[in-house]
Amino acid sequence: MTDYDLRTNRALRRVTLLEYGFGPETLRGRKVCPVCGRANSADRTDCADCGARLPENTLYDFYRSRHRCCPSCGVAVTDVARYCPECGARLPKGAARREAVV
Image (tube, rainbow, N blue to C red):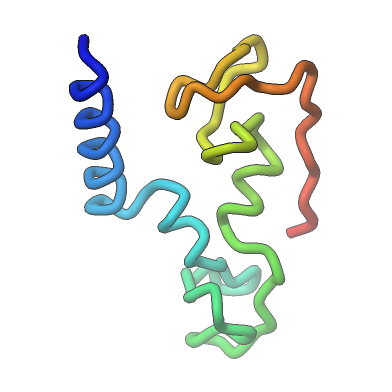
């Protein structure tokens, strides 16, 4: 597989993630109300449905607290990975997961 093929596959994957509402870009733009469960935009401080106070953290912050992620591109990686499968960056050894307050 050529470098062009790899870049094309990555671009198509990003488009698919955005089209179906997944991926880091989508998660960064959403907060979930702890009272009613409605998804709100990340710039809101209060829920659009019930008016409850929204958490400071976005869905992406919560996701990163539960998974080992590449520091370069943010993709989830396995605990034994040495390089990111998405961007190829070398991963730090034994990177501990952060615990976010939600």
